Image 1 (cartoon, rainbow, N blue to C red):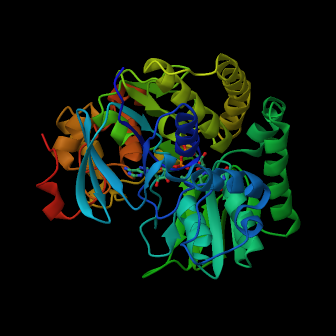
Image 2 (cartoon, rainbow, N blue to C red):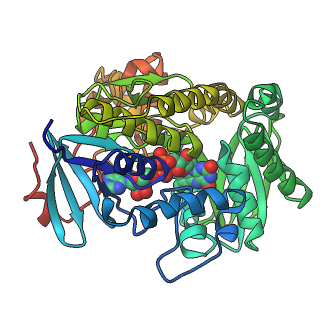
Length: 458
Ligand SMILES: Cc1cc2nc3c(=O)[nH]c(=O)nc-3n(C[C@H](O)[C@H](O)[C@H](O)COP(=O)(O)OP(=O)(O)OC[C@H]3O[C@@H](n4cnc5c(N)ncnc54)[C@H](O)[C@@H]3O)c2cc1C
C-alpha cells in the first residue's frame, strides 16, 4: 500500500496515545489540536512559561499527566504536531483548518477523531447570569490560568466532576459556598459494588467527597430544583430539597453542569453512523471494539465517541491506531491488541456503575419553565420550542430547528441541543432517542467570515 496520510484530531490522552502507537508502527501522523499545548481536558496545561507543579495541577493524576505530556517530547519530529489549529469542517477526505498561519486545507487517507467531550448543560432559572460557569469551565480557569471563577463559589451538578472540581477549588484556596448534587446519594450507595471493579478510581472519588465533607462545606444530594439569584450577576444560589424545603447560600459564582457530552460534530461531518447510548443518555458515533467507525478510514477514540474517562481514552487511542496500522498492512502486535481489548473490557462494568451512580437528572428538564431561555445564541425560549413542536407538528429536532432557529447560533447546538431534544421529547410524548439529534454543520465553532469562503462548504 502506498504511503498513507494519517491525521489525528485531538491531542488529549486518546489522540496522543494514538500518535505514539502510529509512530511505533512506522507512520508519521499529523496531530492537530486547537489548544496551545497537548494534554486535552484532564491533562490541560497552563500556557507555556506559566510553570506550575504537576502535583498542584493534577493531584492524584500527576504521574499520568507527566507520562502523557512526555509523548511529544519523546517522539520529537516523528509526529507533525500542529497546535492552536481548529478543524472546523470535514468534507470528503479533506479537513478545513484555522491555525496560526490562517486558513488551511488538509487531505487525509486515514483520520482518527479524538475530539473529547464538553459539559452537558441544562437551563435553570438564572443560568445565563454573569458568574455562572460550567463545572468544566470552572476547572479550565483553574488549570489553565490559575484563577478562580469567584471568591465564594457554589457548585451544582451531576457526575464525578462535581466533587472533584469542588475539591480542587478548595485546595486552591477558594471559599466553597455549597456542593449540590442533583442525583440521590442512594444511587451512589447502590452502585458502589459495581464501581469496585476499579478500586483505585473509586477510592479517589470517595476521597474527594470525604475531603469536601470534613472541610465542613454544605453538601447536599438529591437536590430537586436550583435557581441562580442576582440582578446583574450572581449573588446567590437557591435550591429545593427532596422534602420541598427551599434553601439558599450567598455566592458570587456558580459552577453548574450535568454530566459530559461527546464532541461529535466532526464524526457527523465525516459521515459516521450514530447510535443512541442509553447509558450516557446521548447520541454517539458508532464504532467497533477496535475504534473503526462506519466510514472506512475513519477511526474514533476517547470521549468524543462515548464518555469513558481518561484511562479508557488512552487505551482506545492506542487500540484505534493499531487497527489503523492493520488496515494499511503494517504490523500491529497481536499480544498488545489482546491486552488492550482485555483492559477495555474490564473497564465496562465500572463505567456502567458510575453512570448509574449519577442517573440522568430528568427532573431538572421537567422543571424548565416556559419563559426560560434554552438557546442563548438565538434567544429561543422553552415556550417557543413547546408551542412550535405542537403547533407545527415538529416532532423531529432538525424540523424544530428549522422553525425556531434553536442551535443555529455560535454554539451550533453544542450547548442547547441536548436540552432542546429533551424538551421536545417530553412535549410530543416520545422517547428522547426518537426525536433525533441536531445534524452537524460547518463551521463547527465560530471562525472569521473571511475564512468561510476559502473552506470546502457544500
Ligand atoms: C472541561 C472538562 C474537564 C475535565 N476534567 C477532568 C478531570 O479533571 N478529571 C477526569 O478524570 N476527567 C476529566 N474530564 C473528563 C476527561 O476530560 C476525559 O475523560 C479525557 O480527557 C478524555 O480524553 P480524550 O483524549 O478523549 O479527550 P480530551 O482530553 O477532551 O481531548 C480532546 C482534544 O481534542 C481537541 N479538539 C476537539 N475538537 C477539536 C477541533 N475541532 N479541532 C482541533 N482540536 C480539537 C481539544 O482541544 C482537546 O485537546 C473532563 C472533561 C471536560 C470536558
